[in-house]
Image (cartoon, rainbow, N blue to C red; front, top):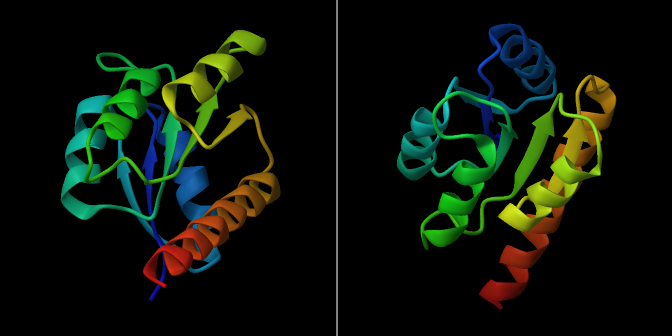
Length: 132
């Protein structure tokens, strides 16, 4: 069964680009265009990984990540934060909110795919180890 990934960004072109590349590599994709929708979809479908934009209207990505980490049902879902913000502050804040990885826009699709595969593999190993 394909890994399920939730792509969250308020820019439709970014969602389309990420979705196209991930689907081309066999991933099952759902998307959201704001933080509230992301939280609802994460709780309902429990994706294997979330790609989450930081800068969105309403609930921003940092708050979404903190809320996901605070809830038992979603706390272990790995999150890759993506942002057009420059500087170290966005990176530091992303990891402080509970993100597993961070990418600055623009990023290469191959870099995103490599990071997605790595996080899904690490999560599968942790899950397998916990079941023993």
